[in-house]
Length: 361
Ligand SMILES: Cc1cc2nc3c(=O)[nH]c(=O)nc-3n(C[C@H](O)[C@H](O)[C@H](O)COP(=O)(O)OP(=O)(O)OC[C@H]3O[C@@H](n4cnc5c(N)ncnc54)[C@H](O)[C@@H]3O)c2cc1C
Image (cartoon, rainbow, N blue to C red):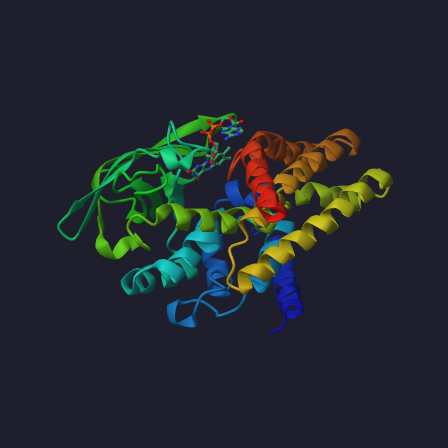
């Protein structure tokens, strides 16, 4: 099936589900639209794990196809948060780096919408500077014991598994000695505590690790190779259409309003066209086996500004009614996080600048 046919099929299905009341469109649906049943529905349609092998419950298609699928899901404001992290970055990382046992056990479960991941990267003293993580993994018979604390792990309280970046040794350089683990969050020694945000009890959580056991087969890639691996993974985390389309349901309203601010809409659409082209190029490079770190950082840097400007245009120009207020509430409360999550604007600027200066030499 071509990408265009896939797009038409996904769009028609989402229209049908929306009309049947199966979901209500909302902004930031890839982070706050958490609906396990909806993820299972997508899994049953074959729309999770599109890029990994059929041997592991995937569909053997490319990242451009996944781009098309995810673009449609985000445009519709569909509730995709339950499987998003696993589908976007941990599934592909397991497919590339995981042991056979890990692939067999988790990839089909992710593709079915049954295994749900959260990310355990940030710590109280390690956010932008991930190399300073202090969570430790200690070698024991048959595996590793994790001890430490993670913070800001979105939706950890309803995840089945966590990705954890931890220190396995002290190398000469801070970036050495980091390793990646897949953790069963129901294992003894794991405690998840929610952190309220502006909305009340939202998606943020802390994860406390008190000698939580991870078997050898659940180590992701090489021991000590965590820094290189996580850097590549960040391309998957930053380079998708969700860095541009979090507020698309509001742009849709601007497009649909007959007496809308034509010039302002035109300016937003012109930017969207360019951003979309960039996101498409990132997907093409992923299909070629690359991890386009700087291009993904560029997309996130510019995409987040665009998402905020969509909110401002909707807030300032659309006729206010209850429906719009509810839609704006979602978006306005999410907006402060756009430029922080997945790497702050300042840090992304450094990534892009460093790469540009390296290329110029
Ligand atoms: C909505 C949301 C969801 C999140 N979900 C997750 C999740 O699921 N899992 C997870 O692990 N983490 C998650 N995070 C955490 C996020 O990754 C961190 O907030 C982010 O990496 C920044 O780290 P920090 O908050 O510790 O800020 P800091 O790193 O302390 O930064 C503070 C300020 O200093 C600036 N700064 C830092 N270093 C530099 C530098 N070298 N040059 C210039 N300026 C710099 C930053 O730009 C920022 O303005 C989430 C955050 C948000 C907002």
